[in-house]
Length: 104
Image 1: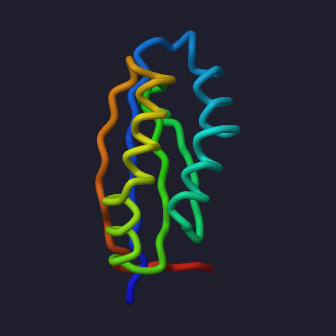
Image 2: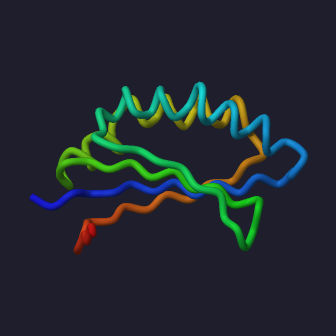
């Protein structure tokens, strides 16, 4: 089965809080999400075009594993924790299936 990638795009409305958000995501949220989802790989990026845009990506071994993880109780808890700590940060979520990977 192909890898599946779950992407969360967050928009931070206050640029003065970027360092605080970055620390929280790095030290609290990302490790929690990795454990909760049981993912193989996760990474985060900040947009160069819009410094308020942050994306986190979680790679799953299979689509059904991703669907179970993002449709389960742990996802609800992760969302509630995020909303509690960052109520003004809007997010979108999208799921992808890996079409091709090239490494040189």
